[in-house]
Image (cartoon, rainbow, N blue to C red; front, top):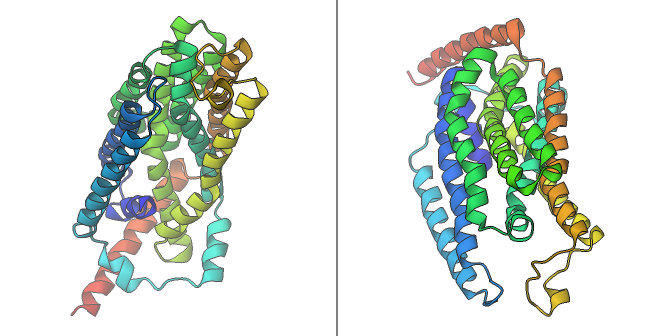
Length: 335
């Protein structure tokens, strides 16, 4: 479902400013869902004195039912632009694959997005480890330190985009998050809060601007192929970047095992909070150093993103002309 929602954004408007504004609204609602996705499990997850999974299972059933209802509601309200579904003639599979994988803009953006998703999976998925074993503070406090800066910076991306452009703003925010995360394993506990704030501020970029960049890629592709193919790009992007989540899970397990983390099973089914120093540092590595380096690489990849400056403006003008022509053809078809 996420692919469908993402693919709708580029065809709603051709303006990067308007796309940015729409994505800000989308990101704020997504952040609400993400925050609830952390708060609800944290409230019902097994504790050291109560290992029962029943509250967690009941909560997940409730979340699934609410999510299903919202998805069904959306399908009755959101409509595609008819000029793209009626006038455009879809490419065959071979042509679609060729246009997709010969797009330099797409390849560069997917490489950067892989790093961003790897980072998001490591940081958000490992927050319980940082809270329970490193900081020994309630998880909610660390989530506040991470998510409040994201919420503040999401609307701010429109100001930065107007000043620096989409891709440069993305690079700046990636670098801000990278600095905070790379520093996290090496600073005293009191400064870990600052690292989380920097990480949150920087992660607002991928939350908002990645889909705007994919919209630019779809615009360029329409000029090349003659048809709108957002779905193809978001689909292939998911195919390539989904393994980032699996890599994140493997990294966490690998680092924990390598640093002698004491599991519940090894401690008679009880959570062991007083982990050895090696395990504490290992947690800092997979929640800080590794994702920080990944974001740094992502920012470097974007140096090779071609849709900037005069070339981007040329693409925008051609797309507007093509859309006007398609609207005229649709009007003729419908009499």
